[in-house]
Image (cartoon, rainbow, N blue to C red):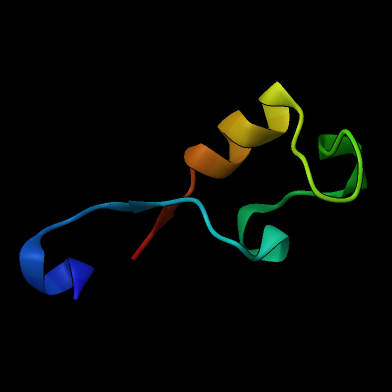
Length: 45
């Protein structure tokens, strides 16, 4: 749907898709600011 509407999708709920690891998290659920930026910079096509 995003592709049809020309919407850029950033980040993912799957940490493996974005190259995140446990050091990018404050705890098991919340990203550190650097981890959040790493997630945001991934563009899903």
